[in-house]
Image (cartoon, rainbow, N blue to C red; front, side, top):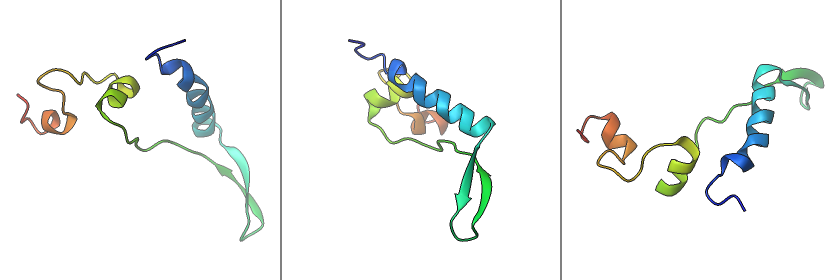
Length: 76
């Protein structure tokens, strides 16, 4: 069992998303009946603080735990 090592589970997803971004995949546009090269990316994720720490590596247990406060300079 991997415990908190979520990267083990995310590696296949990251590999596929990297391929989709770098190379794309031929996709049919149903309205025009033409194919195009579709690319994909993750723009954001929604998670609680433990999930944020696992996904991004952000330290969620110090005085700078809140990314919003830290980015705005309030956490200093």
